[in-house]
Image 1 (tube, rainbow, N blue to C red):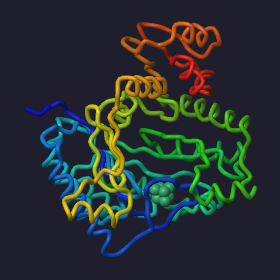
Image 2: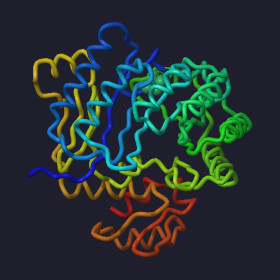
Image 3: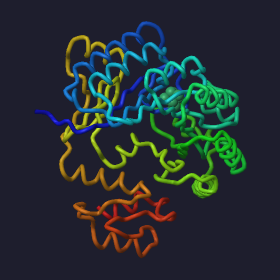
Length: 369
Ligand code: SF4
């Protein structure tokens, strides 16, 4: 008999109204028949899942922009998930949403079909930042989307913000933090902009067209964010994530604790047992593979003990609850060196990054490995 251990479930919806300049996610500015075809294929993939029967402890619709889909399309996918992975009591069911693609009726429909958490990609409240990032929404959309989510009954809401944007000053970042906190979210995810290859931003960067804050300014912006969030009653529980007590993202905690997750949709990445796979990325190729009953994964990895250990260590260090050292066989000299450098503290079988250690996470990980 297969495992009936609850599992995290991720669904990737790859469509966006347009492609942002910095984006290296598996997302496509496509419309028309391919959208509905991908919804049908995703439902089929879930119905044929080898992991059927494992209850969902969390469900997360990410993208892309899930709310680019019509409510009825989201519902068909969610119903397939629920049939394949009956949610445990109190399962967290999240959808990412773009402030420019939601309104009260859509949020009401989503709440009624079972979503109980919304993660809004706000990114910035400054119209020139949003324009430069290539986002389709305007600052005013964010407040309207928050209000619409509240009116629709969402009591668990995350705002994503980015810092170290081209031309962004500390003052501009502080203003963004103030405006985000004033909206009363339960959760904030604050990410430093990174320039990824194969993006428009990468090409601009190579040509020297991006006026990016330097490393020192990035560190100062991060430290300011930690201070502002903690001052507003948020608890930092991961390097980039802050929550009011009890509102930590349970789905993302599964990733950071290196637990298993099933994943569906074009380009979705999952790991169950020792199998880690990435689905075929392009929506057309993905649909063709599903329709033909062919292999969907474009990459498959057999995760060995060493890879699992590395993953547990890299991810566990990100958490404020600390890295559980039991069974990890970390380097003793690396551990004592990091403690002596003021990057780690030890207690109750766990190693926890200090504020200084958060700035050198990769260095700490290398030393422990
Ligand atoms: S909305 Fe998100 S997923 Fe879509 S293009 Fe922009 S950054 Fe990428």
